[in-house]
Length: 293
Length: 273
Image 1 (tube, rainbow over the protein chains, first blue to last red):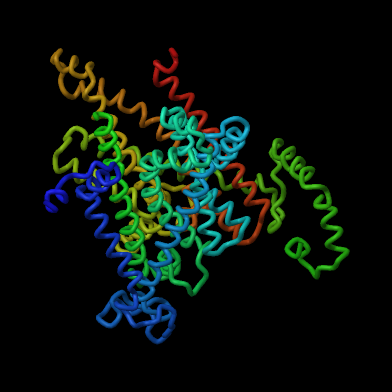
Image 2: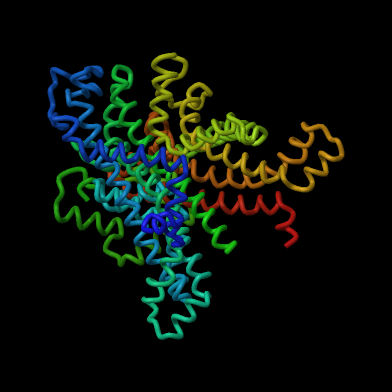
């Protein structure tokens, strides 16, 4: 009896979407890759007992070996420890960056699409101005104002993402606010805030989910790019982009200083893009299914 | 103030400089003055080397444009060919391979790709220079490849999707039913129409490449407005940063507008509406 209930497919759209994503080969590969990278970074002390910032000039530029699996850098720091601890920061910058962008963009999009009138014009005009800058240049301009540093880099990436989230949310709200169930909620006396949070936002989430996932990848890339340009983490903090920049000096002698941290960024972004692709397919798939119903 | 004064800073000197630069005026007056001058091509003077900002940008811009055009050519040549082949062999192992490569191309950090290319072509094979500050083809090769390859991944996806869409259209079935050779069906009928969305997309990418050149220019120590922007941020040369951002945004908006206009010419349906 219990087994029958468990076997019965759930009709919840969320569960159906999640099941579709789990079945997708891209999502499976991406998921395993991402879990592995997160586990390596956050479980760093389990894999190495070396201090990522300890310098040993006598051991500078040692190639990968058993005691130093990823070699050592120009001042004798263990590249493997720096890779593991650096991953934490790179992944965090990506996640925090996109969270700032999504929170601000979705809030502005909800207000702009729902309120309409002068407020809509004002917010749309503001995001149009932001959109007239290429992303990386906008992030650079914000860093020029705020000054270099990790927090400012996250903020800059977040602000650079605001226009895309705002536009997508706004267009979704514009169609949803005319729906009968929103009208019904309004007729029942629900406040604007309640309608936005309880009815409109949950129905926009599916479209936003794709942008959020793919955005995490872009955000990790943008963060690593800013760090590579020297506008993020201050030395000696380990971060993949910053490690690449530092390793560039030794590109002729020590390939491991550039190839390995870059591979970390590449695999992290690839895993998220694979999951994003699967979510995008699943969202399209479940939309067709619900339309058919 | 300390940067501008160069010598020992006295209160009188600061006051004199504030007056000279108009910093005592209200912000809106200063902003109005900046906009007025910008309209006439005067973007102020660098506080580092005292050069007019517009002259510095004018000197660096051709190098960035050359890089962006070369990168776009790389993207079109590689991405276009692979996208075409993937669409023609839809569902085959080759198609799957190209699509997997394209996801990887989208995920690869430009600066890492550049370093891998330097290690391969410059350090191992010694074919191309890793530092390139002139506009010769050899010097442009690695930077253009670095900037163009990730774009090629996007172009390949677009060409493939667009061509697959067109190949299912009635006029293609008609062309085949008429007994036209497959070569003519693909190149004369399908590809011509499939390229319309790709061309407009390329226009948008051109603007993006102008901004994306920042990393590649810094990496290959190449002249250009991207590198100028990064250097100016480091040296806190605010008029220069302001100028570069303004000029790039203007070019970006201009190219977007031109792309919209081109689209109208390429697609008669839009013109008729």
